[in-house]
Length: 295
Image (tube, one colour):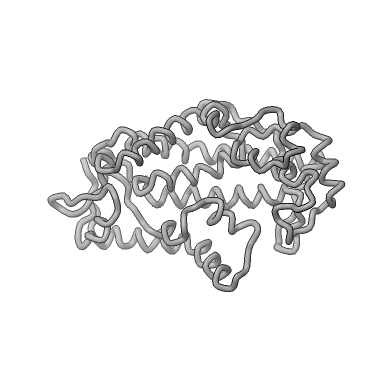
Protein backbone atom coordinates (compact mmCIF):
# COMPACT_ATOMS: atom_id res chain seq x y z
CA UNK A 1 0.00 0.00 0.00
CA UNK A 2 1.41 3.35 -1.04
CA UNK A 3 1.44 6.39 1.19
CA UNK A 4 0.01 9.51 -0.39
CA UNK A 5 1.38 12.97 0.40
CA UNK A 6 -0.44 16.04 -0.79
CA UNK A 7 1.59 18.84 -2.32
CA UNK A 8 1.60 20.91 0.85
CA UNK A 9 3.09 17.99 2.80
CA UNK A 10 5.86 17.09 0.38
CA UNK A 11 6.73 20.70 -0.39
CA UNK A 12 7.19 21.26 3.36
CA UNK A 13 9.48 18.22 3.52
CA UNK A 14 11.45 19.59 0.59
CA UNK A 15 11.98 22.89 2.39
CA UNK A 16 12.84 21.25 5.71
CA UNK A 17 15.46 19.07 4.05
CA UNK A 18 17.04 21.97 2.17
CA UNK A 19 17.12 24.09 5.31
CA UNK A 20 18.60 21.23 7.33
CA UNK A 21 21.62 20.70 5.07
CA UNK A 22 22.13 24.40 4.33
CA UNK A 23 24.32 24.74 7.43
CA UNK A 24 26.97 22.84 5.46
CA UNK A 25 26.18 23.57 1.82
CA UNK A 26 25.95 27.36 2.07
CA UNK A 27 29.31 27.86 3.86
CA UNK A 28 30.94 25.47 1.41
CA UNK A 29 29.64 27.49 -1.52
CA UNK A 30 30.85 30.70 0.10
CA UNK A 31 34.33 29.26 0.63
CA UNK A 32 34.46 28.23 -3.01
CA UNK A 33 33.39 31.71 -4.08
CA UNK A 34 36.18 33.23 -1.99
CA UNK A 35 38.75 30.66 -3.06
CA UNK A 36 39.14 29.57 0.57
CA UNK A 37 39.58 26.03 1.88
CA UNK A 38 38.59 24.24 5.07
CA UNK A 39 40.74 21.18 5.85
CA UNK A 40 38.00 19.51 7.90
CA UNK A 41 34.67 20.32 6.25
CA UNK A 42 35.61 20.46 2.55
CA UNK A 43 36.30 16.72 2.74
CA UNK A 44 32.53 16.17 2.89
CA UNK A 45 32.20 17.61 -0.64
CA UNK A 46 35.53 16.70 -2.23
CA UNK A 47 36.39 13.18 -1.09
CA UNK A 48 32.66 12.47 -1.18
CA UNK A 49 31.47 13.32 -4.66
CA UNK A 50 27.90 14.37 -3.89
CA UNK A 51 27.67 18.02 -4.85
CA UNK A 52 25.87 20.51 -2.58
CA UNK A 53 23.04 20.89 -5.11
CA UNK A 54 22.43 17.15 -5.04
CA UNK A 55 22.56 16.97 -1.25
CA UNK A 56 19.94 19.73 -1.12
CA UNK A 57 17.67 17.91 -3.57
CA UNK A 58 14.81 16.08 -1.85
CA UNK A 59 13.54 12.60 -2.74
CA UNK A 60 10.77 10.72 -0.90
CA UNK A 61 12.09 7.20 -1.51
CA UNK A 62 9.91 4.23 -2.52
CA UNK A 63 6.41 3.75 -1.22
CA UNK A 64 5.14 7.33 -1.54
CA UNK A 65 2.86 8.93 -4.11
CA UNK A 66 3.33 12.68 -4.46
CA UNK A 67 0.10 14.36 -5.49
CA UNK A 68 -0.37 17.81 -6.95
CA UNK A 69 2.18 19.35 -9.30
CA UNK A 70 4.97 16.77 -8.89
CA UNK A 71 6.06 16.60 -12.54
CA UNK A 72 9.51 17.97 -11.58
CA UNK A 73 10.43 14.54 -10.22
CA UNK A 74 9.98 12.84 -13.58
CA UNK A 75 13.37 14.18 -14.72
CA UNK A 76 15.10 11.78 -12.29
CA UNK A 77 15.54 8.03 -12.93
CA UNK A 78 13.02 5.71 -11.30
CA UNK A 79 10.03 8.06 -11.17
CA UNK A 80 6.75 7.37 -12.92
CA UNK A 81 3.25 8.72 -13.06
CA UNK A 82 0.46 6.94 -11.20
CA UNK A 83 -3.27 7.50 -11.30
CA UNK A 84 -2.94 9.98 -8.45
CA UNK A 85 0.43 11.62 -8.97
CA UNK A 86 4.12 10.67 -9.17
CA UNK A 87 6.05 7.99 -7.30
CA UNK A 88 9.52 6.47 -7.23
CA UNK A 89 9.63 2.87 -8.46
CA UNK A 90 12.94 0.94 -8.08
CA UNK A 91 11.86 -1.36 -10.93
CA UNK A 92 12.54 1.52 -13.34
CA UNK A 93 16.17 2.02 -12.34
CA UNK A 94 18.84 1.19 -14.95
CA UNK A 95 20.80 -2.04 -14.64
CA UNK A 96 23.97 -0.31 -13.45
CA UNK A 97 22.09 1.18 -10.50
CA UNK A 98 20.86 -2.30 -9.56
CA UNK A 99 24.45 -3.53 -9.65
CA UNK A 100 25.37 -0.73 -7.25
CA UNK A 101 22.52 -1.83 -5.00
CA UNK A 102 23.82 -5.40 -5.01
CA UNK A 103 27.32 -4.31 -4.01
CA UNK A 104 26.11 -1.93 -1.30
CA UNK A 105 23.83 -4.64 0.07
CA UNK A 106 26.66 -7.17 0.31
CA UNK A 107 29.03 -4.65 1.88
CA UNK A 108 26.60 -3.29 4.47
CA UNK A 109 25.40 -6.73 5.52
CA UNK A 110 28.95 -8.00 5.89
CA UNK A 111 30.03 -4.92 7.85
CA UNK A 112 27.04 -5.12 10.20
CA UNK A 113 27.76 -8.80 10.92
CA UNK A 114 31.25 -8.11 12.32
CA UNK A 115 32.19 -6.87 15.79
CA UNK A 116 33.55 -3.35 16.02
CA UNK A 117 37.31 -3.07 16.37
CA UNK A 118 38.34 -0.02 18.36
CA UNK A 119 42.12 -0.30 18.59
CA UNK A 120 43.29 1.76 15.62
CA UNK A 121 43.29 5.11 17.48
CA UNK A 122 43.07 7.10 14.26
CA UNK A 123 46.65 6.35 13.27
CA UNK A 124 45.69 6.22 9.61
CA UNK A 125 46.07 10.02 9.39
CA UNK A 126 49.51 9.76 10.98
CA UNK A 127 50.51 7.02 8.54
CA UNK A 128 49.61 9.34 5.67
CA UNK A 129 52.43 11.72 6.65
CA UNK A 130 54.93 9.21 8.05
CA UNK A 131 58.45 10.03 6.84
CA UNK A 132 57.01 12.37 4.22
CA UNK A 133 58.51 15.77 3.43
CA UNK A 134 55.25 16.97 1.80
CA UNK A 135 52.25 16.34 4.11
CA UNK A 136 48.80 16.20 2.49
CA UNK A 137 47.67 19.32 4.37
CA UNK A 138 50.76 21.45 3.91
CA UNK A 139 49.01 24.55 5.24
CA UNK A 140 48.57 22.91 8.66
CA UNK A 141 51.43 22.48 11.11
CA UNK A 142 52.10 19.10 12.67
CA UNK A 143 51.41 19.23 16.42
CA UNK A 144 54.51 17.21 17.28
CA UNK A 145 56.64 18.12 14.30
CA UNK A 146 57.81 15.62 11.69
CA UNK A 147 60.13 13.67 13.99
CA UNK A 148 57.54 13.52 16.76
CA UNK A 149 54.87 12.36 14.32
CA UNK A 150 57.11 9.59 13.00
CA UNK A 151 57.89 8.51 16.57
CA UNK A 152 54.18 8.09 17.34
CA UNK A 153 53.70 5.88 14.27
CA UNK A 154 56.68 3.78 15.29
CA UNK A 155 55.46 3.42 18.88
CA UNK A 156 52.14 1.71 18.13
CA UNK A 157 50.85 -0.93 15.72
CA UNK A 158 48.95 0.21 12.64
CA UNK A 159 45.62 -1.62 12.38
CA UNK A 160 43.82 0.09 9.51
CA UNK A 161 41.14 -2.08 7.86
CA UNK A 162 39.82 0.42 5.33
CA UNK A 163 41.17 0.46 1.79
CA UNK A 164 40.32 4.10 1.10
CA UNK A 165 42.38 5.16 4.11
CA UNK A 166 45.19 2.67 3.60
CA UNK A 167 45.74 3.70 -0.02
CA UNK A 168 46.93 7.13 1.18
CA UNK A 169 49.57 5.69 3.53
CA UNK A 170 53.10 6.74 2.64
CA UNK A 171 55.27 3.95 1.21
CA UNK A 172 57.26 3.57 4.47
CA UNK A 173 54.02 3.26 6.46
CA UNK A 174 52.38 0.55 4.37
CA UNK A 175 54.51 -2.37 5.58
CA UNK A 176 53.83 -1.34 9.18
CA UNK A 177 50.09 -2.02 8.85
CA UNK A 178 48.91 -5.38 10.14
CA UNK A 179 47.05 -6.08 6.88
CA UNK A 180 46.89 -4.85 3.30
CA UNK A 181 43.31 -3.71 2.64
CA UNK A 182 42.34 -3.81 -1.03
CA UNK A 183 39.34 -2.69 -3.04
CA UNK A 184 38.67 -6.28 -4.09
CA UNK A 185 38.70 -7.41 -0.46
CA UNK A 186 36.56 -4.59 0.88
CA UNK A 187 33.47 -6.71 1.56
CA UNK A 188 35.61 -9.19 3.50
CA UNK A 189 37.46 -6.58 5.56
CA UNK A 190 35.10 -3.70 6.39
CA UNK A 191 34.24 -3.51 10.08
CA UNK A 192 31.83 -1.17 11.89
CA UNK A 193 34.33 0.31 14.35
CA UNK A 194 36.30 1.99 11.56
CA UNK A 195 35.70 5.74 11.40
CA UNK A 196 35.92 5.70 7.62
CA UNK A 197 33.41 2.85 7.36
CA UNK A 198 31.07 4.91 9.54
CA UNK A 199 31.56 8.01 7.41
CA UNK A 200 31.00 5.92 4.30
CA UNK A 201 27.46 5.13 5.40
CA UNK A 202 26.80 8.56 3.89
CA UNK A 203 28.48 7.50 0.62
CA UNK A 204 26.28 4.42 0.31
CA UNK A 205 23.21 6.53 1.08
CA UNK A 206 23.85 8.85 -1.86
CA UNK A 207 25.05 6.06 -4.14
CA UNK A 208 21.57 4.56 -3.79
CA UNK A 209 19.82 7.88 -4.48
CA UNK A 210 17.16 8.65 -5.55
CA UNK A 211 15.96 5.46 -3.87
CA UNK A 212 17.22 6.70 -0.50
CA UNK A 213 14.78 9.01 1.27
CA UNK A 214 16.55 12.34 1.63
CA UNK A 215 15.90 12.45 5.36
CA UNK A 216 18.05 9.31 5.62
CA UNK A 217 20.76 10.83 3.41
CA UNK A 218 20.82 13.85 5.73
CA UNK A 219 21.02 11.63 8.82
CA UNK A 220 24.03 9.87 7.31
CA UNK A 221 25.63 13.16 6.27
CA UNK A 222 25.30 14.62 9.77
CA UNK A 223 26.97 11.56 11.27
CA UNK A 224 29.76 11.75 8.67
CA UNK A 225 30.35 15.41 9.54
CA UNK A 226 30.77 14.60 13.24
CA UNK A 227 33.04 11.64 12.49
CA UNK A 228 35.18 13.76 10.20
CA UNK A 229 35.71 16.23 13.03
CA UNK A 230 36.98 13.48 15.34
CA UNK A 231 39.09 12.07 12.51
CA UNK A 232 40.93 15.37 12.13
CA UNK A 233 41.07 16.23 15.83
CA UNK A 234 42.89 12.91 16.37
CA UNK A 235 45.20 13.56 13.43
CA UNK A 236 48.80 14.81 13.70
CA UNK A 237 47.74 18.27 12.53
CA UNK A 238 47.35 21.31 14.77
CA UNK A 239 43.80 22.56 14.15
CA UNK A 240 43.57 24.78 17.22
CA UNK A 241 43.45 27.94 15.10
CA UNK A 242 40.25 26.59 13.51
CA UNK A 243 38.68 25.85 16.89
CA UNK A 244 39.30 22.09 16.96
CA UNK A 245 41.04 20.90 20.15
CA UNK A 246 43.31 17.91 19.65
CA UNK A 247 42.49 14.38 20.72
CA UNK A 248 46.05 13.47 21.72
CA UNK A 249 46.10 9.81 20.74
CA UNK A 250 49.82 9.69 21.59
CA UNK A 251 48.70 9.62 25.25
CA UNK A 252 46.66 6.98 27.14
CA UNK A 253 43.96 9.56 27.94
CA UNK A 254 43.71 10.58 24.29
CA UNK A 255 43.45 7.00 23.12
CA UNK A 256 40.68 6.34 25.63
CA UNK A 257 38.81 9.46 24.48
CA UNK A 258 39.16 8.40 20.86
CA UNK A 259 37.93 4.84 21.50
CA UNK A 260 34.89 6.09 23.42
CA UNK A 261 33.91 8.44 20.62
CA UNK A 262 34.62 5.77 18.01
CA UNK A 263 32.33 3.31 19.80
CA UNK A 264 29.58 5.91 20.06
CA UNK A 265 29.74 6.65 16.36
CA UNK A 266 29.68 2.94 15.53
CA UNK A 267 26.53 2.54 17.64
CA UNK A 268 24.86 5.47 15.90
CA UNK A 269 25.66 3.98 12.50
CA UNK A 270 23.88 0.70 13.27
CA UNK A 271 20.28 1.86 12.61
CA UNK A 272 21.38 3.95 9.62
CA UNK A 273 23.14 0.97 8.09
CA UNK A 274 20.06 -1.19 8.73
CA UNK A 275 17.80 1.31 6.98
CA UNK A 276 20.17 1.45 4.03
CA UNK A 277 20.13 -2.34 3.78
CA UNK A 278 16.37 -2.10 3.23
CA UNK A 279 16.88 0.50 0.50
CA UNK A 280 19.65 -1.54 -1.13
CA UNK A 281 17.40 -4.62 -1.11
CA UNK A 282 14.80 -2.64 -3.05
CA UNK A 283 17.33 -1.32 -5.55
CA UNK A 284 19.06 -4.66 -6.08
CA UNK A 285 15.80 -6.51 -6.58
CA UNK A 286 14.17 -3.79 -8.69
CA UNK A 287 11.37 -3.80 -6.14
CA UNK A 288 7.92 -2.38 -6.72
CA UNK A 289 6.60 0.90 -5.49
CA UNK A 290 4.35 -0.93 -3.02
CA UNK A 291 7.12 -1.18 -0.43
CA UNK A 292 6.81 1.37 2.35
CA UNK A 293 10.33 2.72 2.76
CA UNK A 294 9.73 6.31 3.70
CA UNK A 295 12.80 6.80 5.90
